[in-house]
Length: 203
Image 1 (cartoon, rainbow, N blue to C red):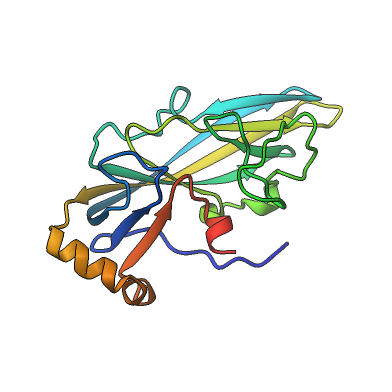
Image 2 (tube, one colour):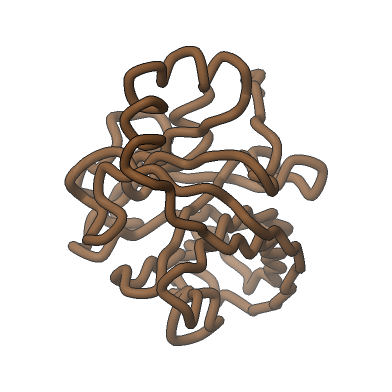
């Protein structure tokens, strides 16, 4: 299994920069400060029928989305079970594990090329697959695909870091963005590309 550098959970006092136009206002290309951090976990189990797949919607099925605009969820996941996990983006695309991010795919035809397996997402390292979610984001779906000849029991453990965001004054925004590489090197700021996954950013 490849070695990854896994960044720790975001914490109180750090800054986050919502990088890129994928983020909606008021977050897009803005810096916020984390004023509060609270962690919890949520464990769910499923039985995935043989030669079939089961979709888990993070919003509708699990309610793993913030209910406040100034709250950010950092969500890691651990997988237990003999299935392949695909991350389905809102536009019906999937992250590819070995290919480029966002390439269109289907779990029924892609095999394991675009999948995370149990050994990729152990409980000891739940942040290898990591999502950043704000209140008004479109939902993310995890597709669990079973290509074996028997039904498979699957357990997903979600490690959620609930973060309260604070506004940063314009003069401080400017100073941070002008010295962003220094802030990043000192661990004071983390850039959050839209739909970011730590397995890509930290690989």
